[in-house]
Amino acid sequence: MPAAATYSTVQELLGSEAETLLGHVSKTISKDTLHLPGPDFLDRVWVGSDRTPPALRSLQTLFDNGRLAGTGYLSILPEDQGIEHSAGASFAPNPEYFDPANIVKLAIEGGCNAVASTFGVLGSVARKFAHKIPFIVKINHNELLTYPNKFDQVMFGTVDQARDMGAVAVGATIYFGSDESTRQITEVSEAFAYAHELGLATILWCYLRNPKFKTPEGDMHTAADLTGQANHLGVTIQADIIKQKLPERNGGYKALNIESSYGKTNEKIYTELTSDNPIDLVRYQVANCYMGRCGLINSGGESKGSGDMADAVRTAVINKRGGGTGLISGRKAFQRPMAEGVELLNAIQDVYLTKEVTVA
Image (cartoon, rainbow, N blue to C red):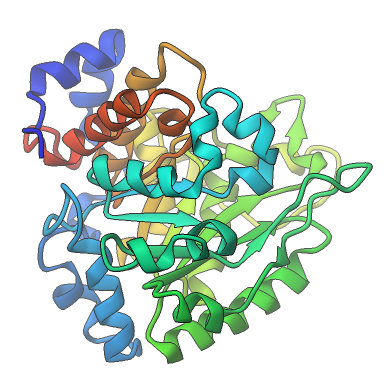
């Protein structure tokens, strides 16, 4: 495995934001009140929970693989975009990733803790790779072929299938705020309870989805207050790890209450518990994951080309300094040649291996 990058490399990649992000001292929710990642995370945080010993073993397996093994942090390669965004849109930039084996190889070569993908992708190569890298099987999806396009997560298989192919965890998406969210909450809650019975860990893709969330004040799908509440719902149905988009703004509840009455909020969220710094916005997301008892991993986002490396490192710095548990990044890695994808994944991991990048 390559050596971790130096602090100066991280500073260089952050550019003009280096001081804002690396020098920030949070004055919102104190880091001393958080359950932070570390080598003893499961012993310190999870042993007192109701998770079965096999489920705890599966969770520890995720934390014990790849370049971040033994740190308490996670770097996961996801590929469910072939369903969620269409295979053509996802793999045309690099057609070798139409082959599931190359997805898994990228995760292994890239030093990831685990690979997350579909029943089809992981099932097609399970006997070759399930013993070489932890599998996370995504059990529901929104398919993008129905005309006109709709947005509804439906089950594509069963938890038993995931267990039988050697997975250590299952993942699922809920579109909180959507008309279908009540059904999705019920389905995923039942699936997660059964997964824990079978000894699997659980990861929730914890997303907001409602056209009304796009307001004149901005797109509130990435507002810290709304995504924070989505996280709180996610850990309530016993997701062990929450995957959430990096917050880009705040004030979702305020924007949605301009023309109608929506939800409940408190002014202290905006005046005391958060600031305009993205690190503090992530800190609020972590707080809603039971103060970090359930790990928060942020999404890597879409590939935008030459600036992907700097953008990925920026997201990792914000996540780590906010008290998060890691990053799940797919398109930025697999929509380029494999060697470059490995380099990008390693750059993300280097942030978590660089001791000078501390929790704010």
